[in-house]
Length: 338
Image 1 (spheres, rainbow, N blue to C red):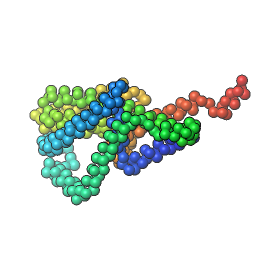
Image 2 (spheres, rainbow, N blue to C red):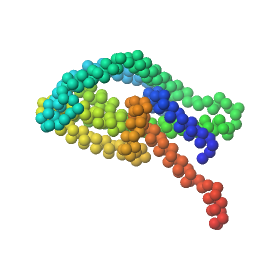
Image 3 (cartoon, rainbow, N blue to C red):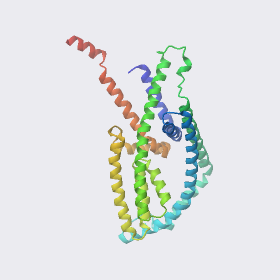
Image 4 (cartoon, helix red, strand yellow):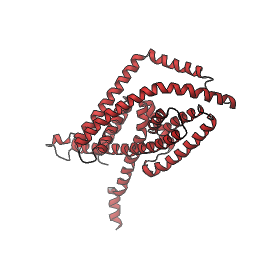
């Protein structure tokens, strides 16, 4: 491995560590999502078209998320008021112990948590402002990189092309392109799988007359972007709502069976869409998700599989390069054997 490549790996490792230490997951995730969207919207032909559609999409998504947040703020408490008593009643009949005995107790625990957050409202407001600023910066960075992908080496044309600076920059470009390729492969496939899962779930919910369909469907898609844990969250919500419907236990059981079948289909789609090269052991993915959540919250949970895949690609690439090119000692030994 050349000196320039070693330096580029050290710089990349330091950058990944700094992203986690300074909680910059929102910035990285937004920039990558934005750049990924720009590549798709430009259709590989016009940067101007891609930029215009990108701005329109950002405005539309911002409006949609604000509208959904307002609806969810009103709907989720209603879902809790309907669902929790039904679940508690069924658990009491079956002799199942729950961490709460009634809805009032659960509300008291939730209210206590809200009061603790209100007491630290200035800290949470500062953190929220910081995340919003990172979101805006990420969107601008994505657009800037899309319109002008210059890394700085062109500005120093007087330097020899084989200088340490020029070669390190070239290696860093390869590192960043590899990292973005991992992002596009993992997140792109995750979006497709989540969309298919959401459509099938929506058909099931509409067919069975579930309430709060819009909120459940949007949450199902958003949770689908979180590997493993996202499915558990969306499934718990759907099964809980099923308990509040007529014939609640049987409806909940039917919903659970349907969701299990859907997720088996997801595993099949994952192997077909993502491919064997992206698969990681479940324990490794879970550890990555936990570490990502501790360092960067939800953005860290989404980025964890991307980082794991990037490390896997870089390690595999170096192993293949080393096996393809014999060392000097092996070359001398080969000549002496002839």
